Image 1 (cartoon, rainbow, N blue to C red):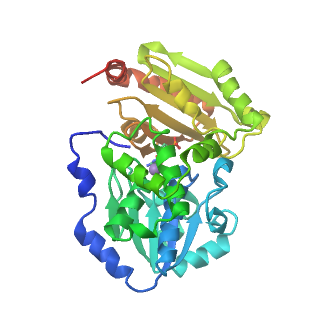
Image 2: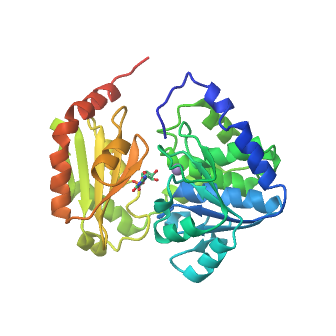
Length: 362
Ligand code: 5GP
Ligand code: MN
């Protein structure tokens, strides 16, 4: 997700510096032990980009594994090769062996080591060459090689571009194309945001050409809700939604008790924040969930209001301009109060974004 400039189509032609691509080519010229890592609570783009890169590297003769920090959402469990990925929280010992024996560590869909959470210190200590491939704002300057392009829909689109830049587009098969499609579809909210550049559709057109069944993928990801998950959404919207019209802001919050009552599984709360943002006149939405050690917060915005900056400045977080996350280490009550207390300082910007977003602009 990014600050759209549809006129700047040059960007799509020169995403990566040739010198960086050449360095990667050289590194991959001989077989390497490669580990692909992605962020904590992996989403469709994290998994889609990692699995597609995995299949590509494997078919190029590399020794490669995918290492994810913790469980993935159930609605993604059908993704090709996902079963072969190592989950750090379930197999710490093998995961650490893998990290320590890697000559190359790819870091996909995150912009700083702390985003892998559980094994951040092991990652920092590992000797392998660390290669960033990501589209989040403000990447840390801690990677040995960086492919950071914030003006793109998703890390999955970047994996396509990287394989293209390596001259190996024919190695993307139907399975890899499906993984990449999942990443692009989920990171753009089914092509509703972060998709204002022609390149995204050119990539998608090629993925469809390679055999992706877009209708089936959409069904597998979005039409597989459990009854509990649907009821949880109903509960959030009818009982836990607060709309602060004056601030063009809406938020939803769930306590540990709420989550227990609805037997919340990994991925069940995904997307709930977007409902708050779908309300007319609302340009800032937040979703608070109580975890054992913290309150986890998702932020979303419309238009020019940056939730990346808001999350960084107030809740130890970050992300993209219109989608970010953060944490609070206070009680739910104090967190909600602190959130409400910050709003007056941002009111002008939030309301301006709501006004812009409600107009058709040529
Ligand atoms: P979500 O609300 O879906 O968890 O996260 C929205 C976006 O913000 C995602 O792209 C995610 O990678 C990013 N994000 C979420 N939490 C954090 C955080 O604590 N720090 C940073 N830098 N980015 C985050
Ligand atoms: Mn992403």
